[in-house]
Image 1 (cartoon, rainbow, N blue to C red):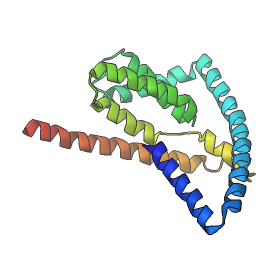
Image 2: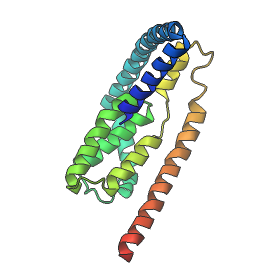
Image 3: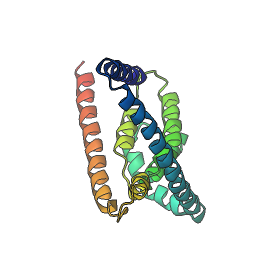
Image 4: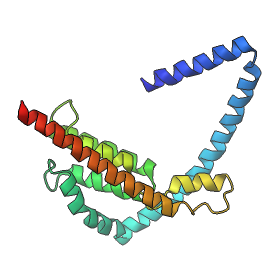
Length: 197
């Protein structure tokens, strides 16, 4: 559906440019944007490779295991439907660890695997309580080091690309707490409705 919306917007833009004689400006903007996108991607790759390497070192040094142990009681509380020792919990913890370091690209495959495991566990086509909670948690994504944003700021020659770390931590703590509260609020409403029927 999103692809259709984007395609529809692009077609409207091109048709509008044709009727108003601004096709040359549209072509110029397309080529300039494409060049900027390639430059930005190359810059992002170097930063992401660096942080993925750091994460690999952290994993070998046992730091990720420590983070996993710290978050295990919270994750168990957030996902009571998932049995202890189920692979879904491991993927959820890996996803949270990757998001902590701002590695959204590394977190995505783990998030997909977690969703697959939770879908198998629920045995339904509908999203389970755990899947909804995970989606809310993953979207709010608690972050300590916003790697991708730092990389973009470096690409655009920011004087202090890491000055956003403090505000990012504060903002993501607020968004994560908000996501959990909203998730629990709607779950309690749904539970009351089901109990009332």
